[in-house]
Figure (tube, rainbow, N blue to C red):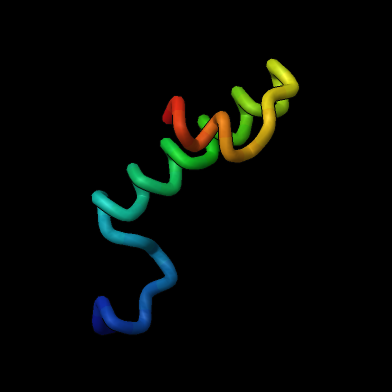
Length: 41
């Protein structure tokens, strides 16, 4: 099995996705606009 065929993401991309998801959770929790959340994040 080669790494090219695995659905798992590299550590860096996984961390970026995690941070992005955290930003969205904060946006939903505080009810902030998307652009404001991205600016804060």
